[in-house]
Length: 219
Image (cartoon, rainbow, N blue to C red; front, side, top):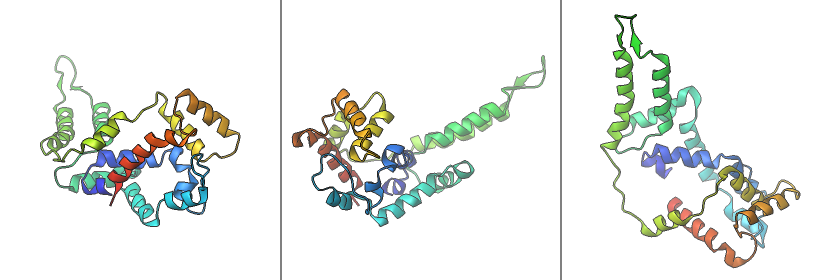
């Protein structure tokens, strides 16, 4: 919701899409307070579930954000929100790429027949209309004060070569659909040297990332 207030449509779309990814959306303990988590680090799964589940108020906000970025009718709501928003604003690049692709594929680069063939200025003007909106955003940048401790945490967070598989493996460590999935998730965890389920000291990096996320998402 804060990203929408800042008119940062790019990051807002990325965050909402990530929350709707299979690795996160499958976690009942996050989306439903009545479900208990099988998080391997937690001694008391029932208390963890009630404290980590998303509140109804935030679920309502998330539903509103989903409606804004919905792909219905060519992302009509997202286009209107961007068009009506004041500067500074950061656009969702996907709509611009879609528009450029439609202009490029729907119009020939040249019109007429040889030797009277000439450039299609209608296509060039259509390209300009799309790109000018994007370039206007560059002329009105956001002015934020840097948070060095947050930047350092984000710079040092480890990534994965196969991100989707890694995310799903970690998701199954948090909440497995059935016990047979746990060995596979453990094997992936060991292959990447995550060390997420061995000792309390191994939780330091995870806790640092969670602390950064809480600071970013605080109301």
